[in-house]
Length: 60
Image 1 (cartoon, rainbow, N blue to C red):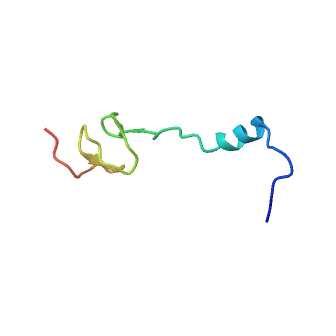
Image 2: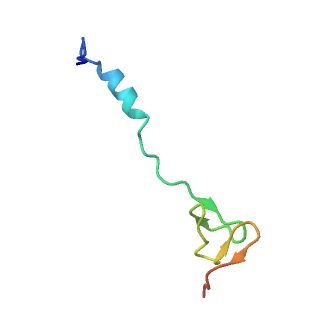
Image 3: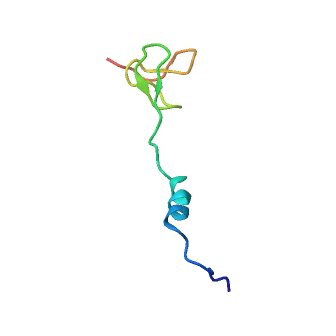
């Protein structure tokens, strides 16, 4: 069974855990109205989806 020979330093442990830091979800600007939207989702401000601006939801 594998057993560590020495205790890991704090720096090595923190450097390894730093790769898993969550940076949040990046938003993109809508091509048509410029409102922030999530990637691969319809724009909640204008209802368009994709570069061609296909209307997928009705917005008042």
